[in-house]
Length: 524
Image 1 (cartoon, rainbow, N blue to C red):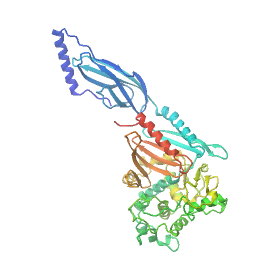
Image 2 (cartoon, helix red, strand yellow):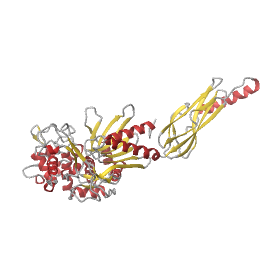
Image 3 (spheres, one colour):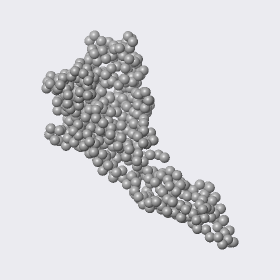
Image 4 (tube, rainbow, N blue to C red):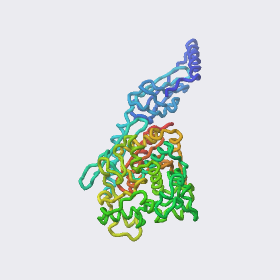
């Protein structure tokens, strides 16, 4: 903002006016005005980014009294960090255009000089489009031949601008080029969608965050031979009925994960993978919620737990399954229909759906891969397990992913979804909305990573930079992520089509470094 002269300088002006008049009456000493040399008389910066106003100021009589930068031209106000220094940073306005800044130097005799700098504030897309496209292409090339396709987006929330990019082949066999509108499996980002449905039902008054399962489920809802109490056993004590909605959302139940990442031959993912590789996928089991719940109980994933309720975060898709079962009972509809009614339709997420549990909306999910190597999987596995397998190509039935990982979406739809989370248009109750974004429990010993109500978050710093970065969103195992990053106030959604690769995270880091270097949206 433009800083007015303080009263100090008003008084200074009166004093120097008097001294000048006295000097004119009886002194032959001549005073010269200060000399100003600006470093760069004109340059450009990106809108909402930092630049530097720099000049060298000298005075022959060595009696310099005051320096002052002020903005004298442009359609919006910039923020000048320290207007009374010869060199200072400024934050360019959000509005692109031509801007002018003037430095005034005044000596103790009241003599003054001025110099100006002209700055063009350029739209962020002139920086983002070439830089982000080049970065995407570089990462895709670097990770060949593992990655079939990439889809990336960066939203500059303060500027209401989104860059989208895609590369590779959506369908490798047919050499169908990938586009930003192609759908992909978002994996565990689904947990945030399931959380959104849960919070919508809380907003509707169906239950609250601390409602216990004993109030929502009865033993008749359980697989034959099991009771609600069996859902949690620690030190021989069964407390399944005391599990709360909050504990399912923040994953502090301690229940083990029914997805084994191919470590358990009896797990749904192992069975589905094995069936697909054998070519018997037509006989593969279609997993419904009660099948998954029975599998969890039969494999004793709720017994002999290492922690009591609410004590520690233990990441587990099993929590999402229990949530989904509750939502279906209370909402009297399948989970995918509740997602459509409460989230997808209101937000116009027209290309988002629950894979295998309903028909595709438009195109099927793009090709993506799971690499199975002897180095990363110790044990006795069939030889045909090894290799980099195209999951859609082998027709693997992943219906077991369901509430914790079964959603298919697009860059555009995920952008709508996470925008609604942060601007409060999805959950409109202010207290519930605040809890959604603030509730969290630590997931590491350093206290830098957290899990909340279906949202992951972390704080940290980029290497070689001291800016504290805060991120909130969710990641998915198929190479997907969707996070908002502060202090830049941007949203990055990334997909790289390969289980376990780091290309999407490398994209994030490179984007943040670029924004750090230009000082995008950074306060002083």
